[in-house]
Image 1 (cartoon, rainbow, N blue to C red):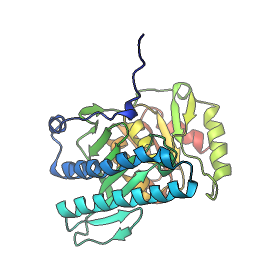
Image 2 (cartoon, helix red, strand yellow; image 1 turned 90 degrees about the vertical axis):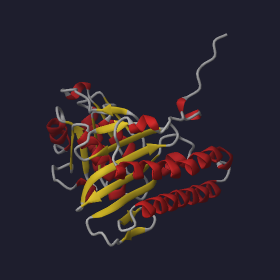
Image 3 (cartoon, rainbow, N blue to C red; image 1 turned 135 degrees about the horizontal axis):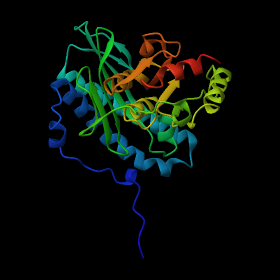
Image 4 (spheres, one colour; image 1 turned 120 degrees about the vertical axis):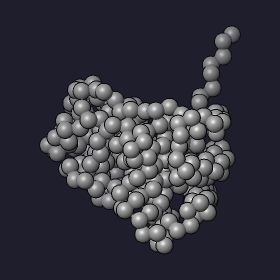
Length: 284
C-alpha cells in the first residue's frame, strides 16, 4: 500500500549554509538571516507545543505571547551584537534609538500570531533594515516550512537559494489576490468587505491567509498576483516591500502614495496589473 507523503510543515527541511553562500549574500543579509534562523528554533519548538494547549484558551494565548517575546529578544540580541549602533522599531518593545541615525531594524518576531495560536503553519519572522527611513533589505522566514525569503536593494529577491520574480499575468480575470480583513475590534471592516466584493467580481479569487509579511513574500514569488490591506504597521510590511520591489513588482499605498510602510495602506502587484488593481480598489 502506498503511503501519503507527510506535509512539508511537519518536518522542516534542513538546508546547509553553503547553499545560501552561492547567491553571494552580503554581510548585512547574513546577519539578518542568522538572526531569523536562531529565533526560529524557539518558535518551531513552541509551535509543536500548541496542540496540547488548545484546551485552555487563556493558557494558549499566554504561551504564544511568551513565545513572541522570546523570539523578539533573540533577534534583538543577535542584531545588536552584529550592528551595535543601529536603532530598532519592534512590535513588542517599540522604538529604540541608535547612535547610527541612518540605519535601524524593523522587526516583527511573529507575524501571524492568530495562526500560530491555532496551530496553523502560516506565520513568519519579519526583519527589515531601514536606511534613511526607506526599506533597504528584508528577510521573511516561515519556520514551519523552512522557506526564507530575502532581498537587498539592487540585488534581487530570493527564496532560500533560488531567485524569485513576480508573476507575469496581465489580466485581472486570471489574477489571484490576497488581503487581510479586519476582525473584532478593528476599524474599516465595511470598506474592506466592499473592496473584497469588487475584487471578487473581476478576478480569479481572493485568499486571506492572515500573515501580511508572507502575503507580500508570495507576491514576490509569483504565487499571488496582487495583495492589498489597510491598517498595518511598519513591522508588518517593511521587509515584504523590499521583496516585492526587488522581484520586479510595484508597491505603493492603495491610493498610489509612496510610503506604504509608514501609512499602513498597501497595494503590491506585478507591474502588468498594478494600475488595474489600483483602479479597481479605488472604484469602491
